[in-house]
Amino acid sequence: MPTVKPSILKWARESAGLSLEEAAAKVGINAARGVSGADRLLALETEEGEVSRPVLLRMAKTYRRPLVSFYLDEPPVRGDRGEDFRTLPDRHTGGEPLVDALVRDIRSRQAVVRAVQMEEEEAGPLPFIGSMSRNDGVGPVLASIRQVLGLDLAAFRAQGSADAGFALLRSRVEAVGIYVLLIGNLGSHHSAIDVDAFRGFALADPIAPFVVINDQDAKTAWSFTLLHEVAHLWIGATGVSGGHFEGAVEQFCNDVASSFLLPQRELDQLPITRATDLEEAARFVTKFAEERLVSRSLVAYRLFRADKISERTWRALTDTFRTQWLQSRAAQRERARGMDGGPNYYIVRRHRLGAALLNFVARNMSEGVLTPTRASKLLGVKPRSVHTLLSGAALAIEQGA
Image (cartoon, rainbow, N blue to C red):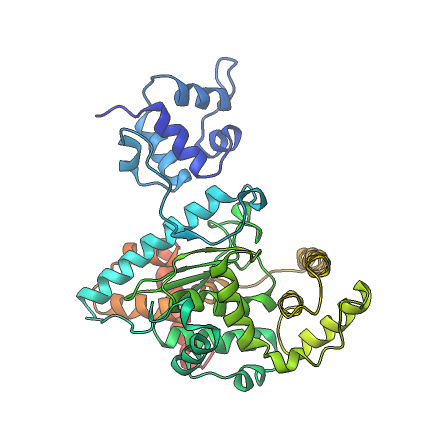
């Protein structure tokens, strides 16, 4: 059997975002003969030595890497996440390895969906993927998105809440062939990815386009992120998006999304100028955003882009709203811990996966194209959970949920 090189072990651990102590504990490398588990792992990563197959298998599972990757001659370049549309590297958090791992995971799912659609379902390319460019302008791109989705602002707002508005928007996006997933971790809350690391990303494949929204973000921001990533698909721009908007592509996709959710004529109704103090501006923005089912940060961004407030005020408002949201989320979680039970695992999982992917898996399993094992990898659950997950999904669809 080939020898596993120390550099490969180090690369696999670091690309999984784990410290020596965390990895040793997860892999099961314990202290022995007065040497800590972390030091024993460090020795394997820095010296020529043989790793037992059981330990290697646990590493493959923990680091989320196929076993064959441990027998490479040298560490590969970073996985293709497309273009990084986020801003300067000094604003990124320590979540980069987690983002890379998530993009790899979604790309692997996309590859399966794409292969099945091409071979079994004979799907053709979606004509709107990469159909336009930034040179076409915000207005024409937005008009095309509205036409293809068959959705206007009045229908969105008629839903009455941000959650319901997002549900309608997501259903229209999935109906045209785009898979929309809500994922903000790598399978547990211990691997949660902060929104400062990514808010969403788009994989602009013409057969099986995917959009992932970081569900660690405020729910009021999900519709904006989804529209932002849809704009990425329209201009054929695969990549990861963040919360800062200096880049030309990010500004363009933000302008498309925000123009749908908040037309300029409505923004002009806000009695805010550069002379408005921060506290008063925050009150105006909060009321205005709640009435329109959008996030306060979106309103602040539009005010900045319209030159109604300075960049300093925009950033101050954004920081204020984020602090308030984090405090509110912490309070909600504290209350939830004091309650019996909690949300049903399968209901939460179905919501995160979306109807498009659930229906795809159910359809192809019933036709014998997908095995439970292969389906489990697409759904991100254990094989024994696939039947329960899909049975509940079918019931929810029949009941119009």
